[in-house]
Image 1 (cartoon, rainbow, N blue to C red):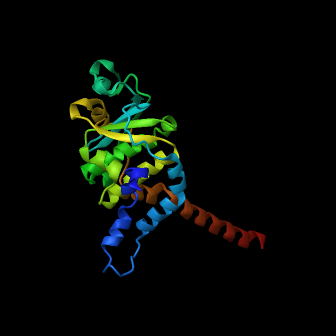
Image 2 (image 1 turned 90 degrees about the vertical axis):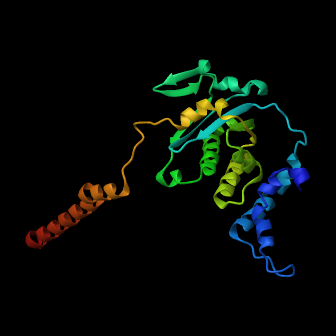
Image 3 (image 1 turned 180 degrees about the horizontal axis):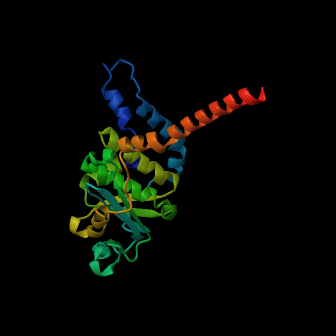
Length: 255
């Protein structure tokens, strides 16, 4: 299958192989997990279309678009630009070809720029998860540009390049890889990944560290405290008191 479908086979059969490995003996039945059933459904629904599409056995260096992504402890960033000569990819990150807007630095030829901050539960994730999620969110927010296009994703994390192509043994990383593939498959976008040195990814790195002073929130405890004072609970109490008074008025004067 891999000769026909490429690395997709490895990405979409990991759970099935895991179920086979964990069986009690060669003659025992194979217990399928929910993710394994999901892989079977994927092949059942997609194998005919994938077979008609085939796979190009020769990798091309020509792409319609290129994306650069990065993640930091506080956030993620990425941008999509028209494809340029593969030998001069670093020119995208040349400081002479960027523009500044309230300390946000983006390439002048950027078609779409993505910036965001991690939630508290996301900050404690592994650096590989954050880097992969940065790729995922950059692609997801750029789908209007990526339909029927070929995209090269540039990242300074070598693990990400492998996981996007082959998946991962770690469940949370495998889920992201499959989600990314599904997004691209549904939008007829072919993606490849390429590792680049960190000094060629300075703009994406800057985007991942950008702090928006208007992007803030309050903790759950504070919200609940304010909600108890002015929120829906107060409205409910007011409505209950109002209905009680109306009932007493009707009973006294209208009966």
